[in-house]
Image (cartoon, rainbow, N blue to C red; front, top):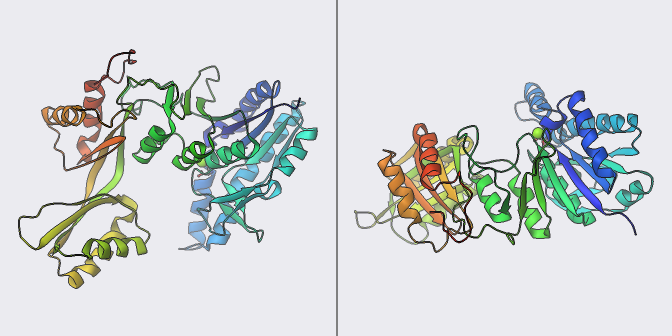
Length: 416
Ligand code: ASP
Ligand code: MG
């Protein structure tokens, strides 16, 4: 019987130096004892940032094809060096770029989506090698142009490969132990989650807790790839398993609290209360590729008028204001307001839906802690409050305490 395939992904900090790569090579050596090992690596340390900076010194708006070809070199450095280290240890290993494997993407630069992965070259590679080292983050178009999948895209490469070769596992090695109930740098008593569902991780990532790239988790959910996040520097630590929630701690209603400080609140005031207005405003923003969230249009005391309020990523704030200012005259709006000093603080949990009392507990906790809530949004798996940025860490601590997230929920009891 042929051996099964394990996919391992090592992020930039895990391959930051030759010393770290030598450490990574030892982990790979363990894996390849029992399985064919497909390794995906990121660029060394902050290489990609450095390359972006170099490009910005050459051009205010670098040509996208050139930029992607440039950024893809970072991963080419790490795959070859790691392969050399493995070979030096006597391990039959070979490195491959995405175009050598055949990781095909759409013809979109800087955030291309994978459309197809050829497995022939992988299978051929495994005929003579125990370990194949593949460049993350990059792809190739049908015309042979090199693309990139968007920052942090190596996770996506790993999951896509795991799905393509039907791997038994996809282990994402990083510099933290796994996924916590909160950022342990902010809340030292945050607890490592042994198991969490795809949906919860996607929400956590979207709401500011970036451990695995949300796109990679979406893909894992779609193809049922069992993901595990673990620490390169504590390889014996079990880490966090991400799956469909089959073995969930079902008694847990809140899994974690996340903070996103890179947000801004925007409002357009006194627009006419008639059909088509919300559509016009949001379409203008969409035309400028601006993603908006927490959209609110509520009861307005003046008959015939509405306020539309929403949040945007801080990097989109200037463009958002510009777009709304242009609409202001057209719609006869009174004003455009922007507040960049806000943060989103959210609780996430697969068991949130239909649980009475959770929202009340959240708001009461913030209220008695003196934290003012500026906006509220809820969906099946999360409750988000916009608060002053200066209050956000305090808010997260209060919430972590109130919902006792540091203690492992015991079966049979709800945790709120
Ligand atoms: N090297 C790329 C980046 O820094 C891809 C990755 O690390 O996943 O964004
Ligand atoms: Mg990186």
